[in-house]
Length: 78
Image 1 (tube, rainbow, N blue to C red):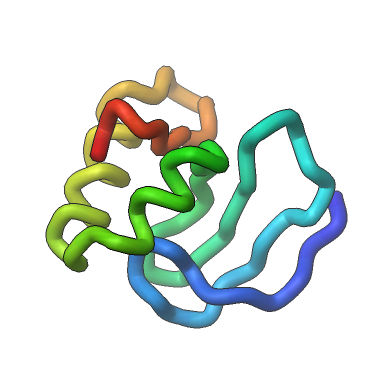
Image 2 (cartoon, helix red, strand yellow):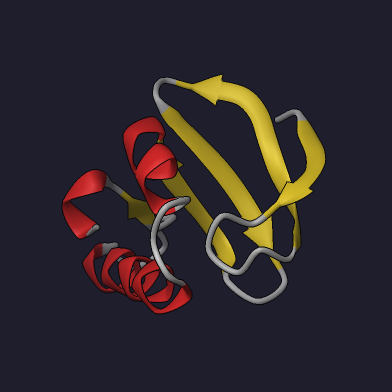
């Protein structure tokens, strides 16, 4: 993995972003949100959502994730 400093798209706090480019998915590690992935489409969409909608989308992803799986936010959650 190729990590760099960035801003979490959910909390707008400093976070780590994986630049490895796994398909159309970006992975983040945020001290507030934890480790999660977000699709490219969802990333473009989430930047225009209010903070509550962003947190709700991540909560949906966490609920859908199987145990041990990294949650992935996709456009259907926005």
